[in-house]
Amino acid sequence: MLSNNESLISVIETTRGKTEDEVGYVGGNAATLLVNLDKDALVGQDLSHTSIKGANFSNASLQRVNFTRANLADTVFPKVFGGIFSVTFSPDGKFFATSDANCKIIVWTLKSSQPVVVCEGHKDWIRSIVFSPNGKVLASASYDKTIKLWNVSTGECLKTLQGHNNRVNSIAISPNGTILASGSSDRTIKIWNGIAVESIQSFLVLVVTF
Image 1 (tube, rainbow, N blue to C red):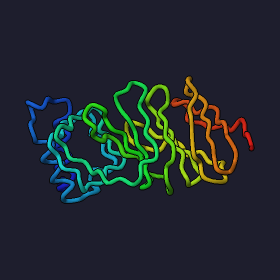
Image 2 (tube, rainbow, N blue to C red):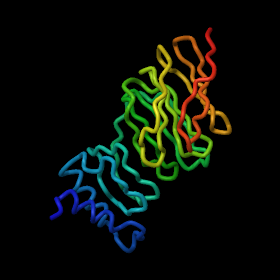
Image 3 (cartoon, helix red, strand yellow):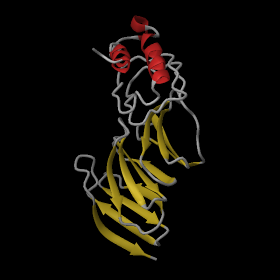
Image 4 (tube, rainbow, N blue to C red):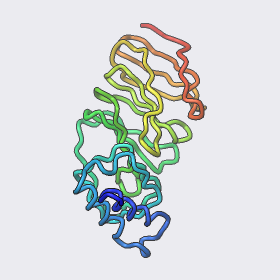
């Protein structure tokens, strides 16, 4: 027998691939009831291509939820920010991402200004973020001395790069998407080779010290 959470998630999943006219507010009502019962119920769920019109996620945890191409019309999302440190656009211009003092990265749709992915894992302020050229990966630099690579569709952390001895303040990705440069308060620039989306490897090939 399905639990309440599983039953409500099943209702949401029945809206996958269907139009707003076909399902109306069914998915949105189920999602609202679900997170009212358990604010963590959607963590890690794949809700891509579903119709969740009119849901209220204002008190929900949406870590690693995949909202790719979901219909989120009239949906209310939590908008509690710390100081915003960085904003960057996706290469196709359809999304933008923000990083803040709450150690969160949020990916938003430009068309509706609604969040679609939340990335959590850094332990200190996130000072710089950048999309890979193909838009599939987001890189972040943090005061916790690490760089993280994130799956833009799911919010999953794909790789953590360690090597700096102080805060990492800025990052950049090469046009071909295979090299990442990071600058730190430890007075070094590190060049990381082999970070292509397909391999997610990291090889430190150059350190520049000032």
